[in-house]
Length: 279
Image 1 (cartoon, rainbow, N blue to C red):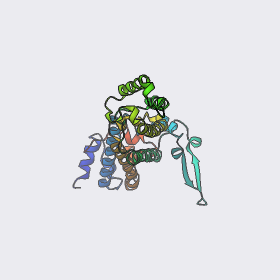
Image 2: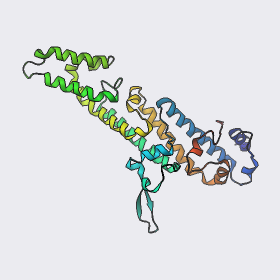
Image 3: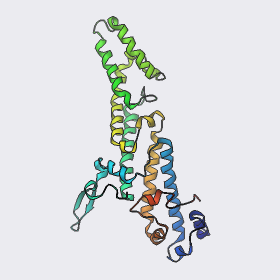
């Protein structure tokens, strides 16, 4: 990097006193690289928000709600005897306490793990699903009732012969809800596959409930065929955060002057607090 000071000026803006960073004796090249990673992390967070309406840079209030998830609530620390202790954040932090970089990484790690699990289930157990292009969480129970109704109307010897009116009513309602899911019609023939597929959608509802604090809608992600992209961007955001943690030591004094604190993720993501240009 030929002139890191000039690049640093572009990233931070003309209002910054760049001499203060030189006076620390810390490498400006590494500071530039660090701030560029902060910008990348902000852009990844914004991409997720723009495409799926969820803010992964969770607020203190949202983080408190996410402590219902054990993998986020409990952390492990070593005491003086090098014994591992499990600590509940719910019991040790106040609801308004800042979200640390470590806190946020635990959120991203668990969210990624859940996305990876649901995607693996979809690919391995339901490689050719009927309803993913139109299914919504609020419909799972009613479709379950429709399948159950067809099963009850089917006679062992007569089939649907004496219940055709009721069967057609169920199929018409089902077709109106899933007009483009051609492979799922007529329901009287496909209900065993649909019934099996409903098991997956119940898992999706469970995940939505688990992550309701961030207003997550897994069905929307699946309908838009965005599961892989979302998972990859959540992973990228987590990787960038860990990279920031790993690379902060050589430029700690510079970061203090800029105002970036690893005890409060708002200093990383809030552009109003710390303005950084994408250079």
